[in-house]
Length: 231
Image 1 (cartoon, rainbow, N blue to C red):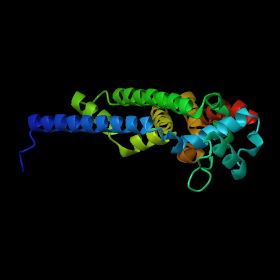
Image 2 (image 1 turned 180 degrees about the vertical axis):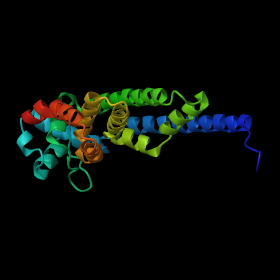
Image 3 (image 1 turned 90 degrees about the vertical axis):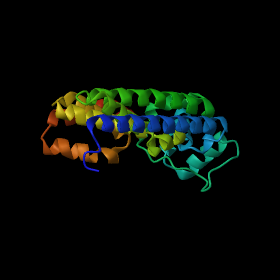
Image 4 (image 1 turned 60 degrees about the vertical axis):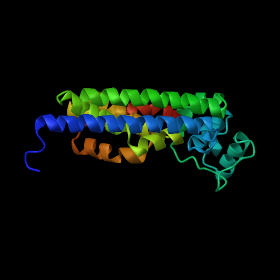
């Protein structure tokens, strides 16, 4: 095989991989569309988030982590349907429920579709961010990165479940980029936004502590000061 992968031949292979990725990505899109059209979106994790937002909307935020209250709300929202275990627990910080209360003003199906649209916006933003982050690469290599992201099974799972994985991916990537360019304000901002899933931000926090980037930590704390106080 020595000498087989010449620059020209390697580039043709890369184009082929991008083409295959695009076909798989299109299949994902069709599969996701069929899932939404089937009316089974109520089974997604999004229902747990939505029920929490409705609880806060109704002024029952104090019972946010009561499984009995969550089960009651989920049963009412699902009109008699229920999850296999009776309840799909909401396990996110209280500020997460507070920030997305406006979605609780919509019916479940409408809120899911609106969130799906927002997921699409975040996906486009992530792809643009990756494109800019690989500006020194060959164009075909950059297309391969983007197309590979689109065929990751985790992406389809995230879209179906309506979870926060895209949000967290953007926050972590932006944090790393800000940290590398010594932009403490931006690093703190993205650290704070990532605290929707605090357990995933422990390493970034430790990184800032180890580097003694106090301004970044202060910036992150400032972002959440009012939402956490209210919640």
